[in-house]
Length: 141
Image 1 (tube, rainbow, N blue to C red):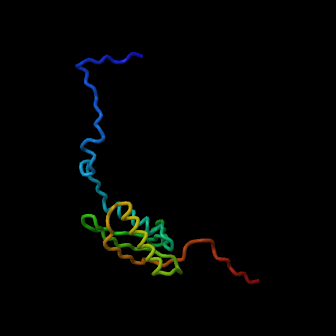
Image 2: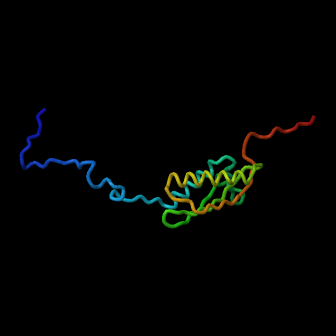
Image 3: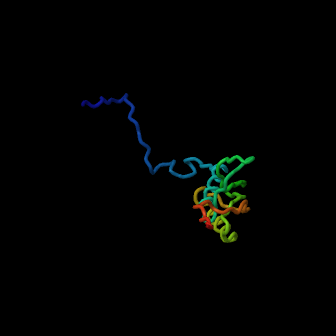
């Protein structure tokens, strides 16, 4: 295979030296993470905490699927405020479960987004018995 001819008029592409300007983080651009992303991360972190459950959504007796935790996010700059509504399994130690939810949500949001969680309010929206195998029935003969 022949190589292309090069002369003084053929431009030669140059690769920038990695040690030159443009390597500074501030010069590469910015990253903005929307509050809708923070909301989804918070909801997922809450839903994966032990002691939380998903509940069935119903409207006029019609099942609409399952629902887990819901979050609302507000904030300014690099700080966010979170409001969570979380359904919990019954029976469960509510205070301990809510503390675990707070810790898990705070850690995941701060680690994945870089936002500092300034306030985190948790409301227990439901206490429900987790779905599982049917309880044995007692038969009388």
